[in-house]
Length: 280
Image (cartoon, rainbow, N blue to C red; front, side, top):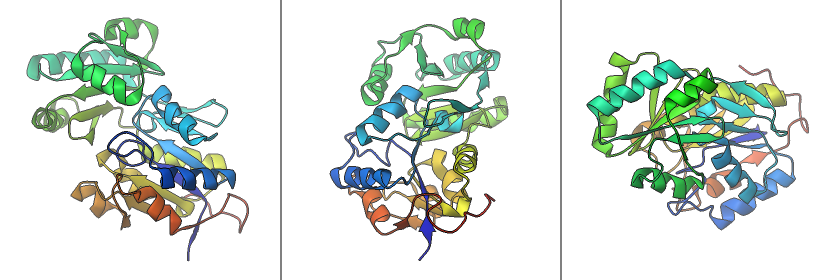
């Protein structure tokens, strides 16, 4: 039976159940592994504040990957990776959406700041309730004056409109990557902001090979991570394309899927067995 030494976990739809809670057996198992120095890495499209909120609930003191891997911090909050979207390009995209898909709501993220032109919009408030983050009333024009890039744009709205926008992006904005984190959320990112790239950085941080890594995910944003790691596990609630990309499908996020899969694996802390292989 293969032994693994690091776990990469998506948050929404994977670690969290449909009520946005961590189920008890999953929580206990993660805490058990953390006490035994197995790195548990939260790898999410969320902002640092949204990721750290969950890390604190579990009691983790580990690196985190935010914005789908565009911003990666080590266990001491030092930045290991920082890539994003040019702010001028972000403004062009926002204008495009407002003209072609006016019912969709677009907001922007820069480090741990969430910018929304209307923070009280019901869709923005819905995301604020889930992530426990507070949107700041501001525009991308102001962000452009302060920083060379933003980390992501989030489009929220009707699932049909979201898919239609996603289909148009390769034609009009080939410089951007658009991935759904759920049916009504479209994450707009730099093509360099991938969970696969974040995993590579963090494996190097620990001196581990990809074959020693386990990854869990439930949606399109997770596919490259599931395929890169030694064992990619899709949640039972994941769509067909994610399940097909994984090595194994566990139970859903409402059925302790993460716990069930982890409980069947052999995990050890890095450096406690044979010398790890070089990351492929």
